[in-house]
Structures are given as C-alpha cells and as structure tokens.
Figure 1 (cartoon, chains in turn red, green):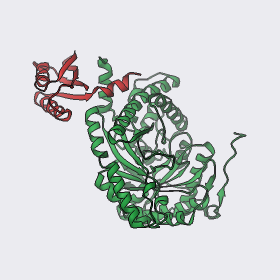
Figure 2 (cartoon, rainbow over the protein chains, first blue to last red):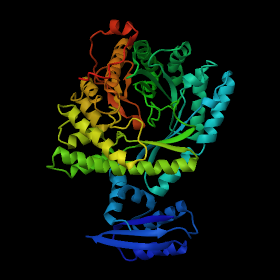
Figure 3 (cartoon, rainbow over the protein chains, first blue to last red):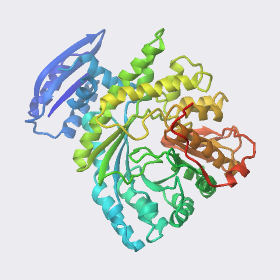
Figure 4 (cartoon, rainbow over the protein chains, first blue to last red):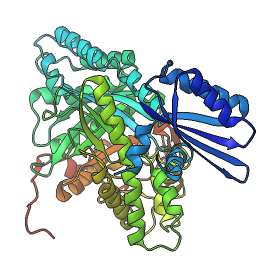
Amino acid sequence: MKAIVTVLGKDKVGIIADVATIMKEYGVNICDISQTLMQEYFTMIMLVDLSAATVDFAALQKELAARGREIGVDIRIQHQDLFDSMHKI
Amino acid sequence: MLETGDILETIRMVDDQNLDVRTITLSLSLLDCISSSGRETEKKVYDKIMRRAGKLVETGEKLSGELGIPIVNKRISVTPVSMIGSPSGDYVGLAKVLDRAAKETGVDFIGGYSALVHKAMTDAERDFMASVPEAISCTDKVCSSINVASTRSGINMDAVAMTGRIVKELAERTADRGAIGCAKFVVFANAVEDNPFMAGAFTGLGEGEATVNVGVSGPGVVAAALKNCKGKDLTEIADVIKRTAFKITRAGQLVGSKAAEMLGAKFGIVDLSLAPTPAIGDSVAEILEVMGLSSVGGHGTTAALALLNDAVKKGGVMASGMVGGLSGAFIPVSEDAGMIRAARSGKLTLPKLEAMTAVCSVGLDMIAVPGDTTAETISAIIADECAIGVVNGKTTAVRLIPVPGGKVGDEVDFGGLLGSAPVMPVSDVDSSEFVRRGGIIPAPLHSLKN
C-alpha cells in the first residue's frame, strides 16, 4: 500500500530528518519526496510504500501526528487512493 | 508522483471547506425475515442487521482514517416495514427492534419505516400508516417515509390527507423535544429505492441483498471554487462547478467501493448531492450568493439553483460508475446557515422555496411552521409539492415541523446536523375542502408537454 505523507507548518531545522527517522524505524520506504518553502511556511510531500511496514496504518498515523505536535507542524498520512481518485481521470 | 498542488487542494478541501462524505448507507433487504409471527420476524430482523451491519461503523471509521476524509454518518436502510410487518401486523414492535439494532451497531440512523402507497392503500398499509406517530416518537434512530405519489400513477390524496395528520400527531407526541419526530418523517412523490439520505432512505424491492450507497457533500468546496471566479460569466461558473463536483464525487466513489468490499456487500450508487450542514462554510445558499445574489430567496434564486443542480450532476456523473439516489442540491432550511439567515430576515419564503424545489433535489425540507397550522394545510402543502414532482418527473419531498405553540419568528433548535430554524409563515387560506375530497389526482399526460 502506498500513502502520501504531508507536513505543513513553520519551517525549522530537522523536520525531514524527524519524519524520515520514524519511517526508517517502522520499515516504511520513502519512494519520492518534494518540498517547497513559501515565506516561512514549510510544505513537504512524501510518497511512501508501506508494504514492508512493521506497524499498522492507524498506529503510524498516530505516531506521526504526535511527533508533529511536538515539533509544531502538522503531519498527516493518507492513503494515496484518495488523491489519485480526485485528481486523475 | 502526484502534483503538490493537487495534494494540497485536497487537504484544503477537507480542512477549510468542509469536504466530507456525508453518509455511507448500508441498504439491507429484509424480505427473508418475513414471518407470520411478530416475534419471529423481530428476531430475524435483529439477527440480520447485526450480522450484516455489525462492522459498518468500524469500517467507516477505518476508511475515514486511512483516506483522511471525514465520513460523517453511517446509516442503515431496510425494506419498507409496511411489507415486512404485514403478516403479523406488529409494526411498532419492529420499529423498536430496528432502534435497538441501530443503537447496538452504533449507526446514526436507520431508515425504512416506510410504505409505498402512491396509488392505493391496502388495509395493512392503512394500519401501518396509523402506527407511524407512535413508532417514531418511541424510538430514537428510526426514520420513516411514505411515498404518496408517482408520475406513473398520480397523487393518492387519501394518503396525502393521512400524512398531514401524521405530521401533526408526530409534532404533538414529541412536543417536549422540539417536535423532533417530524424531522424523522418525510412524505415523497417519486421516492427512489437507493437513497442513502435520511429521513427518506429505504431499501426498494428492486435492490439486492446488501448494498452500500454513498452520499457525498461539499457545498463549501463549490462555494470556495466560485469565490475565485470574480467577473466570469455563468457558462464558466457552470464549468467550475462541474469540475469541482467531479472531484467531490470521486471521493465518494472511492469510499463507497472500498466500504462495500470491506463489508462483503455490493457497491450501489453515489448520490450526487450537495448536502449542507448548519456549519459556516457548508451552505448551498452561500453558493447561490457567491454567484451574485445578495441573498438566497431573491429573484434569480431559482435560475441560479437550476444551474448549480445541473452542473453538479454533469460533473458527478462522469466521476462515478453508478449514480442514483436523490442526486442534486439539497435545500433544507434548518440545516443550512445561509437558508436560516435568509428565512429569519424574511427574504426566503415558503412560496419561493416551493419554486426552488422544481429545479433541485428534493423538496420542502426541514421547515418549521406555526403550531396552529392545520393537518389539512400541511396536506395541501404536500399535495402542491407532489404535483411539482409528478408533473416534472422528479422526486419531491416534504418534511415540515409544525412547532407546537410556535409562532412566526420563533426559533426552534433541533440540535446537531438538523440545525435550527425560524418558524416561517404559511398561507391562511383554507384548503381543507380540497384535501378532504380524497381520491386520486390522475397521472399526467406524458406527451403534449408545455
């Protein structure tokens, strides 16, 4: 299963490292990553593959959201299907 | 990889513009539960609902989490109870069982305390209709609907007269709860068999064993898209609505097909409805106002609504394998912040709402009227609405709340998604003799259309 991770919030040192560390810890492969910075607003989008993950989706979602709260950004993970459905014919 | 802009657009739709899937409704056939003993029917009904819908809420929550889109309601619709209960005649007992099963599965509502009497009533159906006020007032989750008219058979005015009395009795029986019983009872012309929305959802006889039907929402998303269209003409406005409706519907299609698979059911239809909620930024009225009306209810409202309704369907049809249900923009007064505001200020009136129902889904919905409105006047309003549906070959419905003791200008609060509404004036012309005549208003001609 592939999912999209989005990180939105104020830019600071180590956001990508934080998210990537969690992914590594649970065997989640990062397939693609893009990042933009508008003024100080940080947007990162990651395509990840959960087929070898050692954690279930809901638990990973919780962990990412909690880490996001700690570092003051909004981190979410959603099934890729929603975006594919809405934006591809 | 997806475009960053597309991903952020979806996230904005959910976070800021109230995009949600309004309901996943599991439509269950109860035809195999019919038995000559009331007790046995009740047992079979309860067992079947628990077996087929036991995981509905859990499935909805899991999907909502994985996809990151709220699924606001999980509901069940069943075969009309007038049919299931007729051998035993114990209709209220079945309503209580439906209520218990709904509570134990955790769903928001269960629909199907219904009868289809658009041409005539059997003795059993007459008994069933008489049971509606008791059944709905002694349960919490059960919704009821009666189909009293169809384009092919005309309007059953005997049934229309009865439904006016049912509405009044429901209001009296639930007077201590803001006449909430009336919010769970709807009268239809041309009722559809696969509607996922309440209070009118039931499982038609042409439906299968277990089917997932989905109702999408998203008036806030459409309004937000139109706010970027300053200076554009109405052809372009229609195009923007179509493109937005496409995206909204695709989300519904995805949720429905996944839910059906997880529940071992068939995926039925996506209902392309723009269903508002009382939340700010989730209003159909706001869309019409963004188009250029200073208030919903003014001249031009019907035309703007016709454009919206048609464009939503055109965009949605391509996004879904199967479209059905009520499909169109809903205009419930109490459930739409913009409608409430316009009704409160007197800019939106009952006659204008009636005109609006000729071009959109579904009818005079969630409208509070004075407590002294007679059953005959309510029946006459229902008859008018049926005439619009029958002649135009569309579904229409009436869900009125004659608030006990309520006077024009009073406010009534139903809570939650049902919202609040000002009591609106009705005509004081006496139509009782017309209603009391009974009989059938014959089906209209299907040629010589003018």
